[in-house]
Length: 71
Image 1 (cartoon, rainbow, N blue to C red):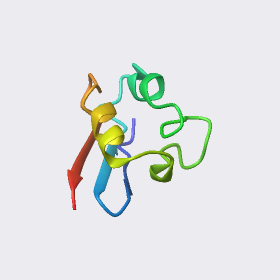
Image 2 (image 1 turned 90 degrees about the horizontal axis):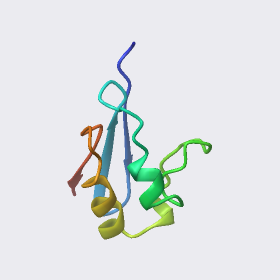
Image 3 (image 1 turned 30 degrees about the vertical axis):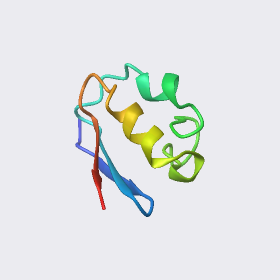
Image 4 (image 1 turned 60 degrees about the vertical axis):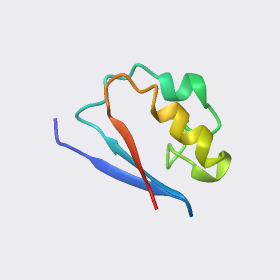
């Protein structure tokens, strides 16, 4: 599998998704479906939630495929 790393951002946080680490547990989708929606392109829409919610959801990612850094 080719590694894909995508970044998504708003004014406060940068979200990084690493395709190789992703185990598709879907915790992101279950916890914040408006922000994380695999049917949409891009699948992460930072405008659909507050930074605190985005970070809290990413903290639940069991594989570490999603990470973030504050601006």
